[in-house]
Structures are given as C-alpha cells and as structure tokens.
Length: 341
Image 1 (cartoon, rainbow, N blue to C red):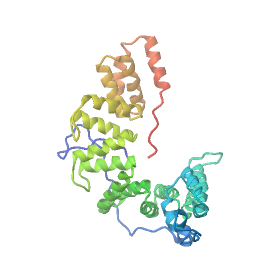
Image 2 (cartoon, one colour; image 1 turned 45 degrees about the horizontal axis):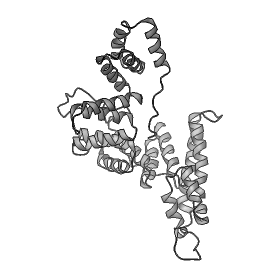
Image 3 (cartoon, rainbow, N blue to C red; image 1 turned 45 degrees about the vertical axis):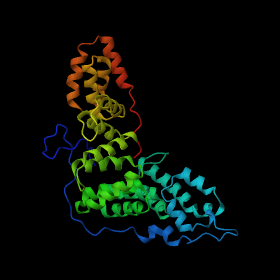
Image 4 (cartoon, rainbow, N blue to C red; image 1 turned 180 degrees about the vertical axis):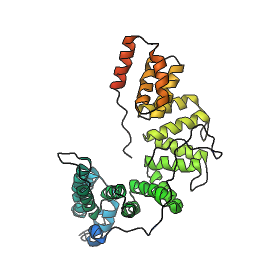
C-alpha cells in the first residue's frame, strides 16, 4: 500500500495532497475460508481442562477458551502464562509449538538464520503455526497469500485472526477491504476502530486518514487529529508528520508552531523523507546551515528532488571541511527505530 500523508480538503485544493486511498475496485467474489485441515487445533482441542480437586480457579478455565485468549500471544507471554499452573501449561502447548513454526516461517521468508529465502516453505511453516491457533502465524500466512495474488485466501486468514482479537489482523483486513472490496468500507472502519482502541498504531493512522477524508465515515478533523496524535505518540512516523501539519494549520488541534516543529523533527528523525525536507528548510531559515544540510541530504537520498536544489545552494556557502563534515554525518545517520506495526 502506498504511503499516504495529508488528505485533501473537500474542494481538492489543499497544499498537501495525499496519494490515492483506494485502488481500482475489483470484482468481489465470495471470500474463501481457511481449509479445515489448517484449523486442526480449533477442531480437536479439548473443550475443558481437567476438573481441579479444589474450588473454582484459573486452572479450571476451558482449554479452548484459554487458547483463544492466548491466540495472539508472542513467545515470552506464552512462556509466562505456561508457568501459572499445569493445566495452563498443557493447554498452551500447541501455541508454544506454533512459535517454533512462526520462527522458521520468518527465516524462510526473509532468508535469515542460515536458510535461503523460500516463500513456499515460509507459507507452509506459517500454516502449521496457524493450525495450532496462533494469530501471529495466521497474519503472516495471510500476508504471503496476499503477496502471491491469492487475495481470497489472504483475507480469510486475516479475518480469522481479526475475529480472534488480533489487532494486526484487524488492521490488515480493513486495508484489504479498502483496496479490493470497497463495498465493505463500513466493515473495514469497524475493524480499524477495534484495532485502534487496542493500541495498534498503523490502524490508528489509517482511521485518522478515513476521518480526515470522510472515507466511509463522517469527516471529523478533531477526531482525525486525535488518532494522528495517538499514532504519533506510539512511534508511527507518518502520523508524526500529519500531527505536525495539524498543529501547523490548526486543523483539529489548537495551532502551535512549537508543537508543529517538535513533531516534524520527530518524523524526520524516524526517517520520514518529507519531514526531513521540511525540517531542513526550517533549520535553513533559522540559519543553522550545518544541520539543515544533513536533513536535506537525507531527504535527497530518499527521493525528495526539491531538497537537492536547496542543499546545493547551502553547500556553496560552506567551507570544504564543513561540506565533508555534513556528508559524513549523513553517511553515518541512523533513523530512530520505527514502530513494529
């Protein structure tokens, strides 16, 4: 999905134009469901834990309930939960096994850990993890199917993960609906709200875009700005950039040039190329030539052509040693880590 930044006003003349939110609508066939053979865990898991000898306690939770609660757990949380009692350890065994398949799936997908990249083997590992109840594996299986052009299979796995409460599955399902099934826009908005309230920053950003554009939901600048800010505070660079614009123009937030600059710099430091360009311009206007050139050089390398012209003008004003210094800073620059979402 292409990067989307600031949506246009309803008149279409906003200075900060966004990229198209929807792709060309396609036919909407009946969505496929994951094969029953891939859902062996949910089909065969015991319905309840052994009856405890004493009164009701956590160990008495039915196996299938516990497994669904823990379906989106990563390995550290699974290990911790497995220490609660023997019943939990036994109930969560399939999910712990799923983590092994998930690990191998990622190795095959990215060609890491001494193995060559192989999408077929990656998919097979993810499906084995999904069959043991892991929504993390379901999401990865859905992604591979989507990348293979098998959209129905991909959406089916995303939907299963979403229904089990996985925020990434909910977000990905919503985006797939936007791209391939525009008739499901209202349902997509619902999934975005669920994922956003769960703290998924990409979903918060996508929801903010919808609210800002009035896509599938009533246009609301204050609510859009709220979700931009939530996603920005969660570490999402694109949301940081849009939050800066909200503060700069007073759209949905009280106008504040100080906060606009704060969020523009944060977006730039997280690798957002347009933010690097605009922050560089701001530094240039304040007379901080050295820092300005560094950000403008980073923006230029990221494809912001307009940044190159300004950078070259500034470089002509610097000494040879200063030019070497700023280029070294740009060469050794490391973006702040992006949010995993």
